[in-house]
Image 1 (cartoon, rainbow, N blue to C red):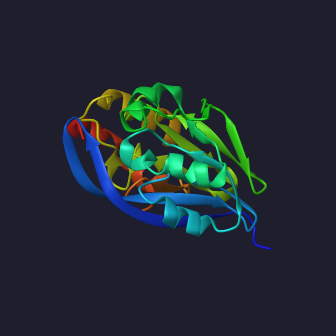
Image 2: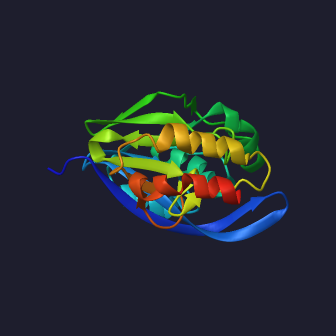
Length: 210
């Protein structure tokens, strides 16, 4: 029997905000074992995510934030599996832009522990890209699921509504770069990185107003 592990799926769709729409590829992360899992960011394709989960119990659909490309498949996946959708309440205004008639099932709170397959993931509230953005730290896996807060090469975008550059820098500096350097950062889009690879560049990002 395999223990807890990280599985990766890429789904494609669009991101829309402030009157613009862009094609995007999203990382969907499945954390668990052969029996039970959680899904982090149900993006675009409920069918593909459900196939990846298979016959395992889906304990929760965790939203790192409520931009539409990270939550558009969440209600359908929840309806098919019975899993609750979890979102930080500060992102409800964004959620309602995509799903005005279907609220999340429960709130994420800073410091909350999410248990699956014998491990725990700690919720870290990391506003900046969005008011209710969170990251999930799984020490037993040496992993951080950063959503759109931290990418390989820099912080998430802060040029649109509900975002704020000084806030995302504070979140990254105080909540993420304090984690062990070897922590693998599984991002919302693009390539994985590590805390150690990104930490030396913080001042550069600030200077550039990245």
